[in-house]
Image (tube, rainbow, N blue to C red):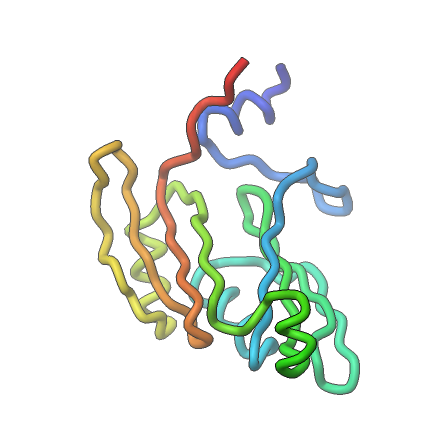
Length: 153
């Protein structure tokens, strides 16, 4: 097992060298009424990193925001009710759990950037340290130390 794989299984942070594609992961996608503002918020409040943003006529056609330990989210501008309904991605209905080693510090950062904290930092009955916040679009972001259950053999 490589050091990177070992670290990931233990719930630590892993990274990918600049200029290389990350290992296969799940990248949730969402729509935003004001995608440029949401991108700025997610970077400033939560620490996502802007990887790419493709725009066309003032709309964000596709954006990728990386989560430093791995993975990330993709998003784009809402294109009107018909297009949003067709793909099932209306603005403000997204929810995600994001693993972090420092939830208390991240909560303070999010609060300072104007995030609505909907669950203060707390320790769960299974030992994770969690908090939850809403972004300006109404999406719920939960952050915590729980890296998921060990994979079955």
